[in-house]
Image 1 (cartoon, rainbow, N blue to C red):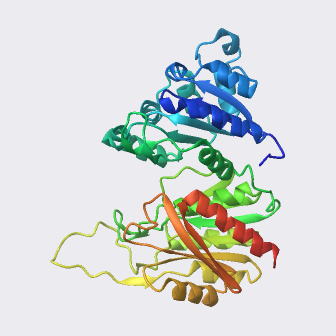
Image 2 (cartoon, rainbow, N blue to C red):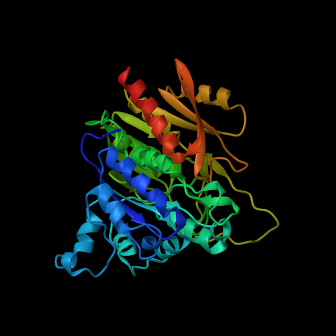
Image 3 (cartoon, rainbow, N blue to C red):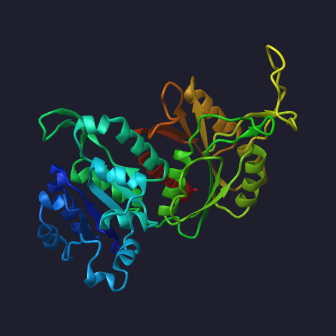
Length: 401
């Protein structure tokens, strides 16, 4: 898994018995050709010594926020700019709470606040600490801000209890970071322009109300990031979400289906790949009220008009474009997906079950892919991993044209 160009990882080690696993994690990254800079918290050094990581990385282990040797040139700011990614493993409950609150009272928390690089965290804590409402609220905030959570797993814990909160094994963390940073991905889409639509649309009813759906945009954003990791120039046309823009991606925000269509047509005119992952509203209000609709009766009748079909319209305008669609279904998944594949003249369609806790408002997904000559199942995994496998198939079909 050695990368052609050395990648740079800042590994943050916080206090907890799982800190001993960080040594093996460091070894895996160094063996794969990464440059690794370890930053330890004061509590982490109670479990494993800084000298251990210095021997593994060939770099001085950092820990002090106010270090005259480094701070003469604002060393902590330079260190925040240095890596391709930051990984905190183990990530204690305390460290996650500080990240959620934006605290910067030690070197590691300061670096996380001063960087624009992707941040990964591998939680490790007692099962009750992990399940605590405060921890879960912090996790929700961090996910919303774009932090990549790796785990935790479930199993026996050092305290003698069993449950969720156990840090992933080093090999699993290593593979996830490599996959999600694109470090192992070839730049086989270099020179190509890919357009991705993602998220829901909002169709206004009056100045304060609108029609929308449950889409979070996470899967579409993950696809955009995976395409960029393969070297593509990516334009992400996004409905309203609370997600951070993926690294290396140009994002354009829209609200309605008609806005998304107009920008999609313009972007597709100079693209080679188009992925329609957005959950576009099928209908909009025939007339948008100029003032807030008042409650005047026991019922209210809304007249809706059909929205334009973005995939079909883009296909009609760009017959030679490689196009991928999504199909979210609650029944007859294969039948409906293959129908859309044919009717909209797509090269590939990614279908998934939705509802009853599936796909929407979750961190995981599963896809069934269909194309004219075949099909493929992508089993349940993180949306980042699902996106990586989907892009593998996109690349394969695009190159085989």
